[in-house]
Length: 343
Image (cartoon, rainbow, N blue to C red; front, top):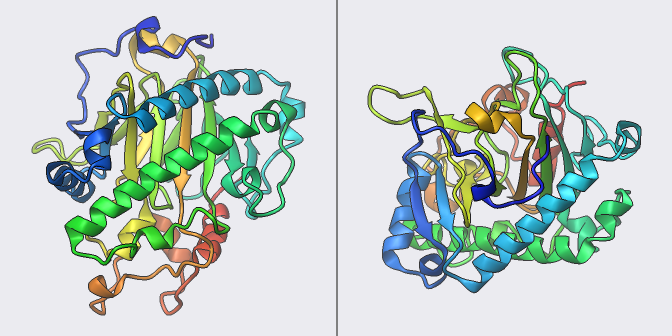
């Protein structure tokens, strides 16, 4: 059954006997104030697990983001209650675009098991909501909340840019070298994703199979367990550990674009979504995500500081689709990633 409130206290607790990923917790106020310790902690997280918690309770922009995420949660609940036939009328164009509705049951071609996923989602383009490019159709339940989407997109993108600025400082890059590859005002693959994974699933159901994100920075809000990342703990390396939802926090991770720009100095961690554990599994699992992706004209190659003649491979099996002799734009790269989605 869907949960009708966004507070963690209203949901069953996450089981305490499962392996929790020991990822860093970073203050949004410290990040915004360019606190050296916060920046150093962020770099360490981005070199190791590739994930960290961002505590949004201690800054005004953070508090606003949390409130907007909770409003988008309520919107997700209502939008997914639309009849499947109506939702499919807004389905994304497979192999062409990632914007629109994606039904559950997709097989991702990079997944070795070829098990269909059990997650449906709406991908709502930043460019569409902000009039940067003509919009594709979305259902009225989404378009009538344009102001909410626009505000959340601006603030979540701003969080991504603060991450880029901190990494620029810590890596000794020039101001704007990373930020300038992710321009908000230029056409890109940036979008908000609303997801639902239903509570009742077949045995062995996978919410989303193991993958790395394509883009630069991902900002995630979720209220139930299910997200797992690969362990780096001695004796458990490569095993799956749980990222436990925390009240007032976002979960932030880097994508393959940042690995490419830094030629492997930064990490894009493998992660997956599985059924929520324990009593949490009796509830539908929703999430609200913002993906910061390089603008379409950005070149997918190492920055000069990291261009030493070698080239780190990213994106797992997707690498087989890449011409090693060509430098792709982010727009071209996005098109190739979209083709990973099967039927």
